[in-house]
Each structure stands twice: as structure tokens, then as C-alpha cells.
Length: 228
Image (cartoon, rainbow, N blue to C red; front, side):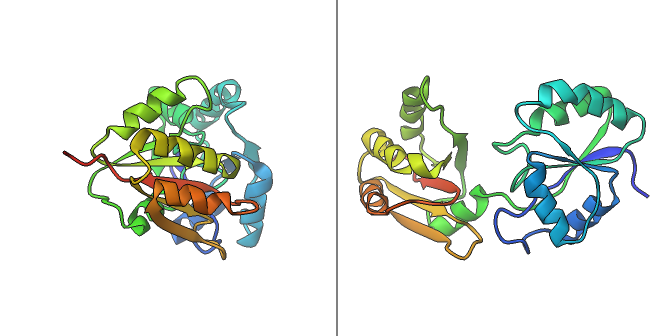
């Protein structure tokens, strides 16, 4: 019997098999699944023959619907929060609801599971004992300031980037960090056309400039600034 609480449930970032048995059980047993994109989540639930009702919960409505969700949880509801892929709250909606639950005395349980930056980091061959996760950079205001800050970090840092911005981002990283700084681009992780390429920033930029169209979610891992 589940206690009234919010479960934060990671979902596969590509390969449907990358979901835990516990996550599947929770998704079956809760009364409601809060989904960033109900269309995406319907495909996952259908794949595993799960018919739990869905409700939309995303960056554009989380401020409006959180109070109602908290009210339902306080009445004993059991819910699961999922994003399109990976772990909710990591560059995806989730933080506001988790904080609201704590403020309202609602128990939050976060399940371990898939997230894109961890496999990218450990497969890159770059130092992983200490690292900085940046997520998405600002598109305009503040971008150059963040790049300058990241370029001086002594530890590996990690970015998320969209496919159509990848080449531009690699060029900016080369400008701030130096063209010879070692880095890795990981895309389509866990999928058929997975690519994990480690090289210097200049050569990575040249490689992806030659691609007709870069596809997939992108993780960029960059080595830290070496001590002189």
C-alpha cells in the first residue's frame, strides 16, 4: 500500500529498456502521473501496458497548477512526476513542485535512474572525480559571462545543448577555453545511432560542421583548465 506522496520517477533517455522495475511498479500504482509532455509519456506507458491517468505538468503551467496538486496530495493522493526523458528537475520541471511539497509537509521520494549527463561524463574519458554541471547556457543575456566563468574552472564541466546550436557553442567554447582544450560531444545516448566523440574543441567543431544535420539531444563535456 503506497503512502500519500510525490514520487519523482526517471524515464528512459532513449532506449525503452532503461527503466527500473521499481519505476514501472510506481507508475502502475499511483493515482496520477504528472507528465511534461503527455504525448511522450503515453507512448512509454503504452509500451509497458500501464493505464494510469496523465496530467500535464510543464514549465509553462507549473506555477498555475502546483497549488492544486499540493491540495490533492494533502488529501492523500499518490502521484508520480516524470519529464520527457531522464530525471525530472535536471534541466526539466520538478524543482518547484518538490519544494512546494516540502513546504506543505508532503513526502517526496526520488527514484534513481536515467539522466543524460552521467553516461556522457563517464564515457568521455575526461576526469570525473570532480565536475561542474551547468546544464543549458543562456541563449543571449549572460551567455558570455557564463562561458568566461566556465573556462576558468579547474574541473570538468558539462553542458546541455540543442543540435542546431552545437557548432556555434563549440566555437564559443574554443574561443573562451582555447581551441586545444579537450572535450567530448555525446548525442543520441542509449539509441541506435549513439555517438560519443572525444577530441579537442577545434576538431570537434570541424567534425560537426561537416554533418548535414546533427540530430539528438546533445551533452558537451569539457575538461577543466590546467594549472600552469
